[in-house]
Image (cartoon, rainbow, N blue to C red; front, side, top):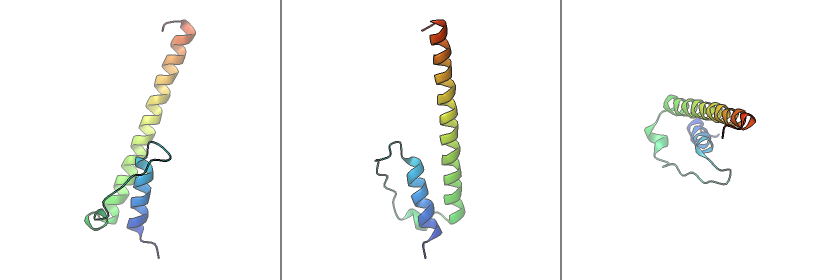
Length: 73
């Protein structure tokens, strides 16, 4: 049986990646340090950060696009 905490750590590693081929190392002792609820909270916060970052990037790119249409760059 796969441990829930191990799965959460794997998910955290994936969320921390900035490149598909990037290798993220997390100290395995965190499995002992954090409980399941704390790890879930970390996952949710990382997801929120990714969503905020995408929204910010989208708004910035839209602003640049609008400026290029007006020749303001």
